[in-house]
Length: 144
Image (cartoon, rainbow, N blue to C red; front, side, top):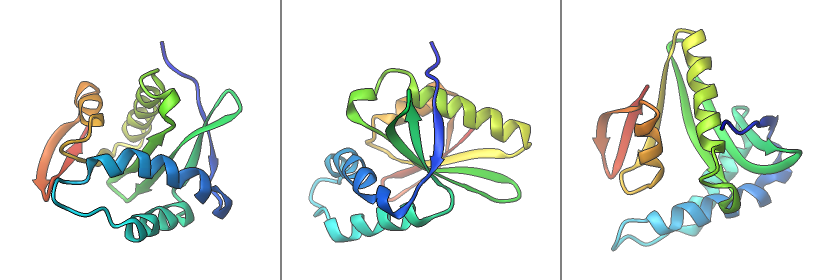
């Protein structure tokens, strides 16, 4: 069953909401032997929150995650998708990605994303029709 959601533009004040979701999802995926660089990772989230393509994902009036989307003349790129742990595996990510697929199809653009090869979300993307197009440095670029 699809999960309804809405979006609102991210603001600087949302950094405190976005950072822990990102850190808790990404830190466990850091490659073995590589040190987690907290200041560098925090900077990534700061820059994302400041980006005009970043929105807060909302469900039933509550903030439940955040997304960053970029768009060019030929491609819609899902740059970030993070949801709170308590709402994972309940259809929200699937609903958002299906919505993005429809949006890209309407615009006659490819939909792409990049995922770490050890990220469990990769299975979701594959299930929703994304195919790997390149692999580099532990990351996979996928296209729908």
